[in-house]
Length: 165
Image 1 (cartoon, helix red, strand yellow):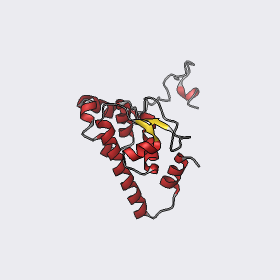
Image 2 (cartoon, helix red, strand yellow):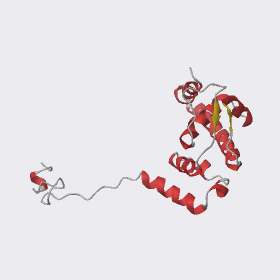
Image 3 (cartoon, helix red, strand yellow):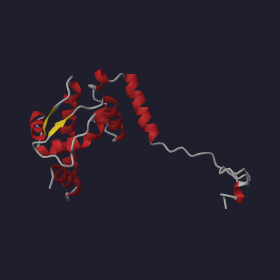
Image 4 (tube, one colour):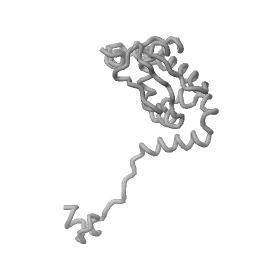
């Protein structure tokens, strides 16, 4: 089994009571927050093997794998997370705007409200990205076609005698 499969099994498929489940995620989210605080403060992209990064950020290997799974869509060059092993070289070279947008999408308020964002993105840009993400999930219904109006398909017939049948 790959590292990612082990992580996903431990995180999503292991049977735990509600209290244990909550404790698992609280611990994970606290460690994830600590990693984000460190990488958002740095000026250079972080890279190394999965094991080296776990040691660098002082987290278990499985937590690092979960973190890599979560950030992968926000990286400039995605890591080979499906096949990675302890000695696989990975990079955390993230696109700040994409990462912020994805954090808003994940409803990870404890991450997109970190003070470290202030030096990476202006307040106006963060608000704009927040609005973009929120509006991207809003469903807007089109104008309802009346039964006696011309059919939008272009046939020239009334809607009730064409596509509205």
